[in-house]
Image (cartoon, rainbow, N blue to C red; front, side, top):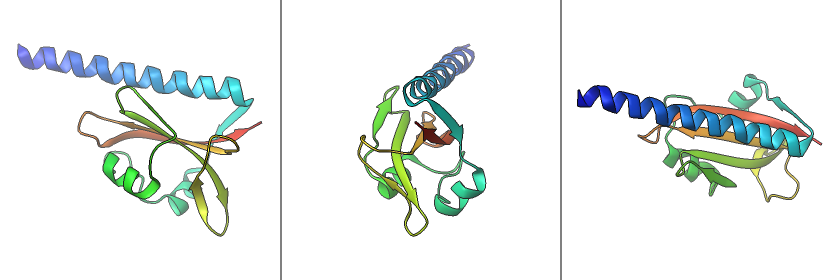
Length: 121
């Protein structure tokens, strides 16, 4: 009985996390004008360590630093970034970002889902 209750609680937390994730993306879209998902091949080339179901929150923070924003008790992290062919993706200040990396972690701090979004003004 307790296991069934835990499954329901975990499902509710998961559902709330995804709702917040999508609301955040919609909020960015409203502010930025136009958003599109970056092709996965570009992301795999420049951010190969990010893999759903494998990458830990600790790995992300060690490689990218402090997130630009955190939500849902630090289960959702976002990084505002720029890109150039020499250096790849870089985390930058809030002023002039072109890309937003959104990462959703599960209760064990394993990456559950992510999106790299290109923000067009």
